[in-house]
Length: 152
Image 1 (cartoon, rainbow, N blue to C red):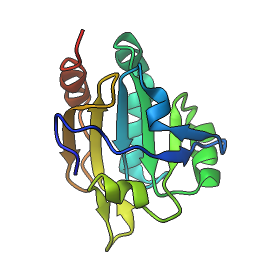
Image 2 (image 1 turned 180 degrees about the vertical axis):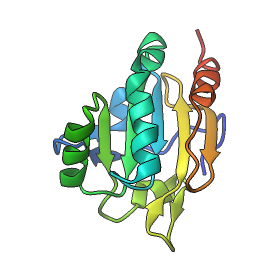
Image 3 (image 1 turned 180 degrees about the horizontal axis):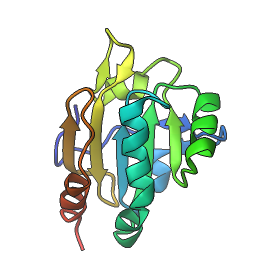
Image 4 (image 1 turned 90 degrees about the vertical axis):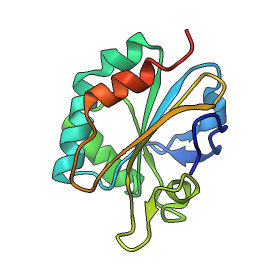
């Protein structure tokens, strides 16, 4: 699992529209990578809706928000449409959970990503990492505290 001070592992994943998103291609802007188990599940839906409702927290900090699950891009497109998400939902579908595994947050027994967030500075260096237990949403205050650690 990447730790604070490490350069985050690079990846390319399709978003909900099938467009490739490459982490290293976002250099120059801070990024928050939000791993979550599954689209349409109760806790995940509530958690991502809270992020959508508070996108200004990320926008004000100049942070690109990326949400990653093992769902297919088709499921993510339906999820984004139903919930009116305005940020990228990335599909770590195949190879199943490979990116989550590289980040140390893949649960091979359940076949899903764990609830973990990595906040990266504009050079792709991890400035904060936080997790939540299964079934427990991450608090918005944890995001605010992590974003406050970004260099000015």
